[in-house]
Each structure stands twice: as C-alpha cells, then as structure tokens.
Length: 434
Ligand SMILES: *Cc1c(COP(=O)(O)O)cnc(C)c1O
Image (cartoon, rainbow, N blue to C red; front, side, top):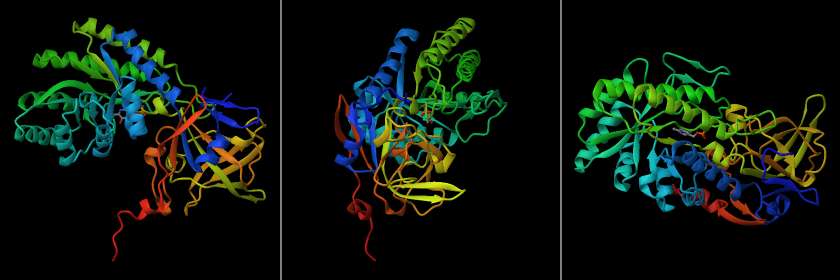
C-alpha cells in the first residue's frame, strides 16, 4: 500500500512507522519531525553485506555513503552492521570519528578537499583517500611526505557512462567536475603519475555514475569499462590494481511511479560482468566496494508536519501550509522532486483532496509538493511526507532562522531521540555582539 514496508495504518486510521503511531510521535516530540525506522535500515545494510558474500565470496565491502544522512546514530548503526563508510567532508569525517567508526573502513571523497581535510585524513589514518585531481594528488603526497609516511589512495575515474538520460549513453567525455576522464587519456596519465610519487600508494579505482538510477545496464557498462582500464594499467605499467569501487546510485521509491530494480538483480548482473572481464583479461577479480547512500536510508525515513492554514484560491489551487518546508526538505525546491504525502490522521481515507503543500519560509518556491492528493487536509492534521530519509536532514538549513527538526528512530513500537531539535539558543550560538 505504501512505498515502504515499515509503514502501516492502525485501528484509529493513523499512519504508523515501525509500529509507532505517527500522530502520537508528533504529539510527543513536536513537528516538524524526522522519523527513521531502524529495522528498514538494518535489513538494507544486511542485504548489501550478504550480497558481497553471495557474489564476491566475501571479497567486498559496502560503504555507507554518509552524505545521505550523517549523524552519530546512523554512523553507529552502519558500523554495527559491519559496513564501511564514505565521507565527503571534514565534518562527516569528524562525525564518524566521534561515533567511534573504525578509521580503516572509511574512504574520503570530494573534488576539492582542503589541506585541513587532507591532514585530518592522515591524522585519523583512514582507509583510503579518493583522489580527484592532480593538484590534490600532489598536495596529499607532500603532506604524507612531511609526516614521513605513505597513504593509500583510490583514484576517481569518469568512466564515460551517463546514467541520467533515459537510455543511458556512453559519451567521449562527460561534463562533470568529478574525477579523471578515461577516454581522453587523462586517467591513464594520472595513474602513471601516482607511481612516480613516493608517499602515495594507489590500490583502488573508483567510479560513481549518478544517483537514483533504476536501470542495471549503466552499472554493468561502468563495471566493464573499469575492468578494461585495470587491465590496460597492468599492460602499460605492470601494476595490478587490486580494488574496484563501483559507487552508489541505486534508485528508491518516492512515489508509486518509481519502480526500482531489486538490488540483488543489480548485484548479480554486475558481478557476472566483473568476473567475465577478469577471465577475459586474465586478472584476478578485484576486492569490490559499493557505496549506497539513498537506498540505505531513503525509504526508511518520513517527515511529519502539522497543517496550519489552508488557502483555497478558486480556479487556481489550494495551498496547505505546514510548519517546515525547504529548511528541512529542499529537494522539491532544488530539483522538483516527487514525494508521496499522506494525511497521517486519516491514512485509511481516500486521498481525494488535491493540495499544494507549502512550507513556512519567505520564498514562493518553498513547496514540499505541488498538486498532490491527500485525504482532506485540515488545520491541525499531521501530514507525513514519505521517503525523506536521504538528503533531507543532511541538506537542512537554518534559513529564516528556523531551528532544524529533531529526528527519532523507531523500532518495534518504541521511539527514541537520535538528533535533538535545535533551539533558538543554538541559532544564535555563534553570533557575536556588535
Ligand atoms: C553521493 C555519492 C554516493 C551515494 O549515492 P546514492 O545515490 O545516495 O547511493 C556514493 N558515492 C559517491 C562518490 C557519491 O558522491
């Protein structure tokens, strides 16, 4: 009935998540409120970890792309499920270290890491720094040299697979700020360069072809291109790259129009392609990393709002205003993202009321969803927006000096706070008097 299995309707007609009545959660913790279902995240982690056993004899590690939702509790959950972690900033790395995550299972991404961030990576002695460009490679090598040590690196490659078009295409050179281009020879030059540097050790190649992808084919093509490249490197330099990171990007359900591929199908097809290429090139199957972000937390999360005013503009549209908006979910304003909205107080009723759910910020573009169907939304009702676990809290802002919402984790009908609601004191914390 709903996009996620953790959601249901109770005898009161209220929406439930993880066995908790969402209307009660709104009462207890206030709104806006992020809610995340622990079992959904854990089960997804397990399916990724198990797939590495099933398809790669255990020679692989899924890394949680923590930019989707970075906070101590989620990092600790990933850790308890034996995942690795991918971070893209000093802040995410700091969060991971504060959460007690094992440094050797962390990989650090980003196209413009600062010296301070590179130094943090060295200080914490994390697993791999994913090098994006030559400028970074040179800086990292000299920072490591200053410390009289070596650092293991991955190299980010643009495989030339554009997964964002409906029928994905292979282009000579994709327009992207990330990584080294393959087809121009830039990537091979960069790989050779790393072998000249004494303080970096290239063990891994990385690619990430996009996000919210439903097709299997672009993932298979990217894996094949990367395996060909590993073989080319071996032929040209004699070096065997032993690890391959195939990135994230697996699509999830935001509305019933989305039809994601079962993850296992993807894993099956990609592992076959990798194994076939290894045989073709007579090289060993590399250790495999994948980096799911959205697919790990997206469908596990919902956001609860309280309906304020209702504005019916005849022959135009009906606006229903809620107590959050672009500050806690910027994805509609940013990409026009589709979401399912449910009247949590009337989850058993027909969604026959066409409304535009508006936020409370001073921006006319501050909408959560335009012209969406819900059961009659009246003042005081609780609206639930589904599949908000990924890229909502992590993109939240304090625009209009709105405090960021709290987040609770639910399991077996019980809830607990994992992120406190910001206060007005938090808002002025760093302000200094004139
Ligand atoms: C964003 C990102 C991911 C995660 O992408 P999802 O679509 O959330 O799975 C993985 N790897 C890299 C390098 C990324 O930038």
